[in-house]
Amino acid sequence: MPTTPPRDREQNRMSARVGRYARVGANVGGLAAKLAGARVFGYEVDNEKQAAELAAALGGLKGPLMKVAQLLSTIPDAIPPEYAAELAQLQSDAPPMGWPFVKRRMSAELGRDWQSRFKEFDRAPAAAASLGQVHRAVSQDGAPLACKLQYPDMASAVEADLSQLGLLFSVHRRMQPAIDTREIAQEIGERVREELDYKREAKQIAAYSEIFRDEARIRVPAVHDTLSTGRLLTMNWLEGAPLLSFRDSPLEERNLLAETMFKAWWHPFSHFGMIHGDPHLGNYTVFSQDGAPAGINLLDYGCIRIFPPEFVAGVVDLYRGLLEENEALVVSAYERWGFKGLTRDLIDILNIWARFIYGPLLTDRVRSIADGVKPGEYGRKEAFRVHRALKEKGPVTVPREFVFMDRAAIGLGGVFLHLRAELNFFRLFNEQIESFETATVQGRQSKLLSSVGLIP
Picture 1 (cartoon, rainbow, N blue to C red):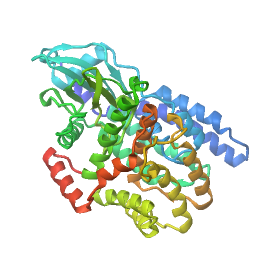
Picture 2 (picture 1 turned 180 degrees about the horizontal axis):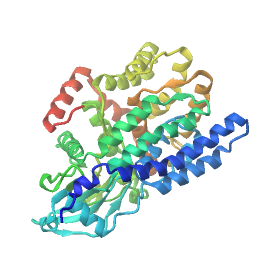
Picture 3 (picture 1 turned 135 degrees about the vertical axis):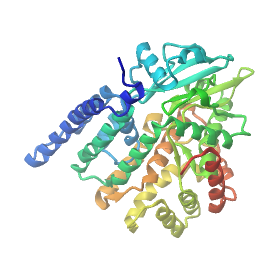
Picture 4 (picture 1 turned 90 degrees about the horizontal axis):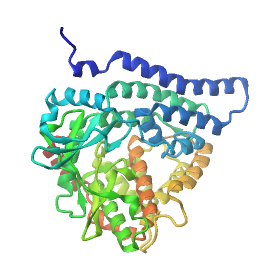
């Protein structure tokens, strides 16, 4: 009796999509309806209570929308502060697929004889997240492997969740927002869809491998193409310890790790216009030599953002404008970022956030990334100040490039706080932008992306 091929069965199944729409629509749409009623009938809304309800609904749902919610929680005034505080607590801890599901998924990707292509394959996942899970395996020649396997129906789940993202933003629009979120929604949609394409992720790994080819302190996994597909990514397993296990190590060791993290993030951006857009603590491990930490393993490349060189130039110009107190350069930089309709008041408000992000880079001294601030509170006070000021002068449309730039900067700052690092961030940053030229970045980026088959 003929059967439908597994790949076709999972290709955007209508039933999966309809079910997803129903659950997400009920959770988010219900909250939007409550707020609409409050506005019509004039009664007060308990933001903290509603935020907790939304977080509970999204946390139970798991999957792509939870990933989106976590991202939104890092952007000043993309959603109300009460919502941001709740959503920041969500963790990408989706329940893993059981062994029967794993076998079916692996058969769909590598064929029914897939197990014969591995010497060993662990039944239980080593890690599970919102879009997929990772299994340890051993190749036929004895090499340890990491197999990143996408959950079934993720294309359906992503499209259903993104279609409801407008409802999540509509919740905020009912509260007189300071920020117009249209560009944010478009950016998030494109990036989350990219994360489903493991062939693209393999190319992004190849790009980072080339960038850090001569950097001994940063390790990038090698991809096994014959054991990879668009929804299965097989890489070398990089042994390492969690970054947070070094919180109580000697300052010298913590500083080494923080300095390596700084380079792992800023070097690709300043030289090639690329950033690792998800600086989550779980995406890094530490490898050691002779009993001491020696460097960082970079583990996840699904969320890599490629920027136009002109945007990179804007980031550098904004830094130089703030450093030199050159207002014309600052304004020009914001315009290169994509901000429009700038007034004196809006520039002053944007400078609040810019001076926070760039602050550690503006003084030539050894310091922490933020004195007296806990990791989970990094940027919260400044975000509140921006929110309050924009309430009076906004709304302002946030350029789409800002989304992942901001998210990554906040995440990276949190890592430095966890490590309690004390570094001269001014010198580290100026080493990366020394002799910066837009045309040079353009040439490097074009050559790199062409060599790995990526389209910016």
